[in-house]
Image (cartoon, rainbow, N blue to C red; front, top):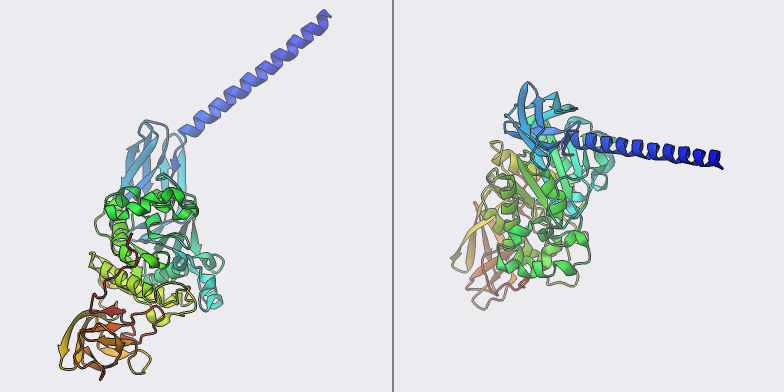
Length: 483
């Protein structure tokens, strides 16, 4: 009995020793994990960093730990704060690479194949998410996608109730094996810049199909305007979490800030089309919000005007009013808009021709951000003048002269007198103006162009870029989207 008791005590003592050793090892492992220098996930092998700008680099380490960041012969230091967060800022560097980035504290992290060039955010809903393998001539485009200096960082789609410090995602080098999953619009935009600028191009891709503009806008920004109170009030009742106000800003944009960028491209609006009037203020609010978050002034923000589509069960002018809201957003500094009315399929909300969409966005970037002398826009309405029984319409961005893009008579023009009844009208190009008239309207007062959802207008310029739909009147009052 005594021997058995001794053995039991010995076993118990061994078990206690094992438990104690295990606990010590766990504590040591936890301590080591806390002490390890860690980078935000956007900093990884194959990344592209923005040239000619200060480069913020951030991550986590043990509180008080000294961190050294080295890249291409430039070095800087930072100290982790009480929460373990640290941020260093490298001096501007010219385009080039590949380089190694070395981040050293109590441990060392080395990132390989780092390029320095031009970095853009690409965001929005399904037409931005739409992959290269879903675009026109997908097989040929993917087969030709070997561009070692073109890279994508794709953010995993995760909504959040509060701004997140990090996200899931990874960098991929463009090749026939990887490019099929890239955003088609983002890819064609980046490829055009690569061809024209001959520097590395990096795209931070963060998009989610079917999402609302307010989901990509911070809570702070939405609270600045009482007109958005209804958006905030219904947040708790929204069943898809990705469409709750601020959820995608929190989960998919905030973790990228303040990664150095040149600008952003955006393709969204389909989910807000029934609230077009509200979009006039909501969309500019989102743009200002992003610019404030990055804190680098009015960086270029380029966006796609929706393509015509026959929205079922909605006012036939819902899309036209959204186009108008997008057109009005050009009043913000350093913005550009790619018009797509000529490459649409009114039966398909996802036009397959993403090549021209990406190229047209790139034209704005090349002209406005990189100083290239080229035509970046189709005709945009400037003014009108009544001339007898006709109205003369003048435009900006005539691009060497106005044309009918398909060589046919101009279509989708309508004219009205003081009775506000619009009738189909004939339209002819005279110099840099379009003259609109109808025998049924001898005293005209206003003109509309492409002013319905399924329009297929054909006015453009010599550069082959289409005119935006427009109206010269503001009657009857727009009511869509008032809340």
